[in-house]
Length: 312
Image (cartoon, rainbow, N blue to C red; front, side):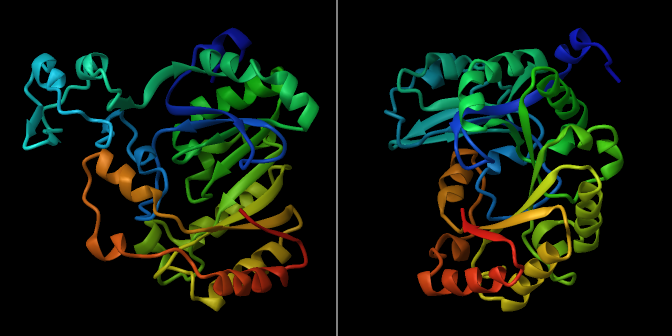
């Protein structure tokens, strides 16, 4: 385990985005660092580019002008443009980046870059003035940050060294042994609770609810405050009063939980899946956003926890 600041700065991880001036990932103005890799399998994930640990080639189809420059420069012939349709043989692609550099329309991007913790924290520190004046700081999200436990630990340690408020966005369903010595560096945990039904959670999320509950208990012993963040997903939990009542019970029964946020379903994941060349289930493609009256009912049920409840 790295011990000095210099050693911590050299720890490497795979980052797919650094979002400055974020206002929905914890208090104040923040910089959110998004890491690749996740232990869950949620089909509705609004960041499907975060699921796989390795870098991926992303195609913004609406930007593509069919100019053919990618076809010309690709050393393995992974790109094909026929009838205005751009397809990529991802089994051939080596992620060399030649097509990304050559594309004049910015239609191609490699999602996921190897970066040192020092490089990332230096970028985060560029906005330290805004954190100090707004009560903000750094948030680590994903994916699941604890899937890159060593890198996450390095970022949190450096943030503590530089006096930054820290948030960790986690699903709590990972092996918490990997988080030993790290959780005490977190000021606020943003914990995703997606499904509380023990019978349905493994199928829908890829992890048992018992493991998530155990992880939440471990986070509660870490010392930081906790906000439960709950996506409202059609066919999964949107119409299930029992689920939302169970979330309220979780919040009420944990002293470290200071609030609950519910996050209405949106369809952004669909275009991202297509950009990654992944199949979208046609039945799910047609799912619509949640009705206002249903969101009001969810707010009412969550309000029974006696703590702050907000729509995210």
